[in-house]
Length: 473
Ligand code: NAD
Image (cartoon, rainbow, N blue to C red):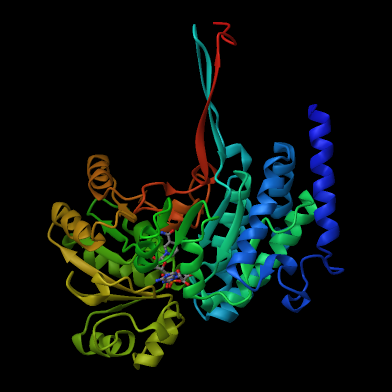
């Protein structure tokens, strides 16, 4: 069959599938009551995965030009919706704040790499030519957290579809309404641009059980898991290939050579961003003694409240820690002012961050608190600060930041921390491409080593060999 015949056949198949799946006047914005599968939302995992599998078969045979059109359509379709995405996620989860969520969603829409991320490697020589191409896995099972529910869906969809896959999403039950709404919207945008329905699929009642069912489903070819340590561990037991993006506990080291005013402003901005629910956000400040007072003074100027009286620290502990010293979920992602007020701690203005002067053993330092309550730890010198930072990062190798003008020390810390993201002299979010160079991602796969994931990580490398030809060296 000629190339033209094949393309005509694919067109026919696609048209046929469109006839079988009518959409509402607003396309994918149909309700689940229209039947299982409407808008990409199914009643069962089986149905959703089967539909995504069929969709991917069609998608695989379309051109790269059409894939690019799909990615552009996602960007164009979501750009006017970033405010709504932020508001919906905030309303449903009660974590973070709308203003920062708008920034995060806009980043995901505009700065997630598309098809251009798939770079082909070519070797030519006397024996001919060998290509290494980045090809789709098939259907990817993607698990998303409650802390970045929409950003993860957007980022994963762009990268996974750019690489030629379909995706089944398992959203957090605590963000299900927003996530299902977004799946419908994405599915409609993609269907309109490609003619293919169900490239993005989910179910109408996401749950932990359904996520586990998806993890072992035979037609899921790759798992991409963004969440805490429990879900990453669970996915690794599935026997499938996993990209695991787990928890972090990022330290911010400040030494005596740093530009203190900037370091203070950067740390407050990074640690307060979306009320500290990002996995990359500064969760500890480890400071060299000689500049500790000046740093805390500057942090106050930048919008932090410094808490160093034991009595006041106790009030905060009683509020934000459970009896076994874990973060109290009721305060995860809440504003600093709300936390301080609830703890009965007086403050003036509208502080963005509560900074608690304490020791490296304190639960605020050891636990991933995910709230704008961050410990401030004094150390005698840089080498001790690095040791403490390493201890607090707990070998998660996720993210660390450092403020210093000493290049040798910056290099030493960057090497020693071994983190997927290391930010020098900037807020942590610079590592996500916000006020820092580079693309963005909301899936930082540290336990499995891919780091800041993009389309190429959602593709498998295949080798294609032509003998005796195509070398003109
Ligand atoms: P979470 O672990 O509670 O949930 C994440 C997802 O996993 C949800 O969809 C949830 O339904 C599912 N899940 C949880 N336990 C499961 C199990 N045993 N089996 C199957 N599915 C399960 O996380 P969260 O509270 O929504 O998000 C915060 C956590 O995620 C933090 O630890 C944060 O550091 C981490 N995170 C990591 C990254 C990264 O890129 N590395 C990004 C965002 C969040």
